[in-house]
Image 1 (cartoon, one colour):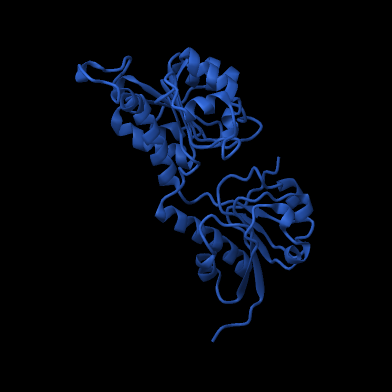
Image 2 (tube, rainbow, N blue to C red):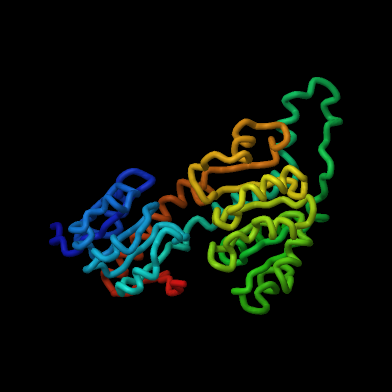
Length: 336
């Protein structure tokens, strides 16, 4: 027998069909109100007002919508990042917020390591150039090309994903530097990496720099013109974290054109899908100077069939615990 509905949970939008999986986790006593839109202005006030909880995928959530969440016990984002959520407005309304950090760690780490290894071995450049070789097949090796155990990888952000990246890289013999002021002393000994005192030391020593930190006041633009200039000449840059970490495409283009940055791999951009910019135009047109040196994937490092299910189940389970116990796991308390 189906129990009476006593909760209403809103879902703003969804990348993968209807929210049937969430319905299974939330249970028969929950009615789902599926807004099916990333446009916050389309969220009707009367629908927001009836929600006991709200789950957000790609939509923005600002003060105007939050003002109508008068019954809401909590907001849960499907993903890890929450740049589109106005945490201050939620806090002022007394509504707790949680993200969903415990999914996709393996996928993002695999994606980043695949980018690191492929750019370090210059695979995409070889593939692009080999199409035009008609003789002397084996003589076309690209230089410089170092051994992995002669190269240094700098990991910026040694949380869940950064740690998973380090664990994957260690068997290849790379020297690994890690920078994360949020990790306690001795973390480097437990995980197995070297810890420079300052970020500039990691930049200046690393043949590859891979970013695994959130975008906040300390990290936003970390590899804009100033940061790029601090890199070891010929370094490789990998970003599977946040587009805001490399906001200045002009600076990245200049660094790639000069060769100061040998190559870059990016999974996340400030604007998605990306708009018009000379660097992006060169990438789209496979211009000779950049082909194989700039790799862009469509913000899907998190994805696998397994991770997509895990993400949805975990987010829905967070809401279910909130409704049952009044506790919001993975709550984000820093609203600065």
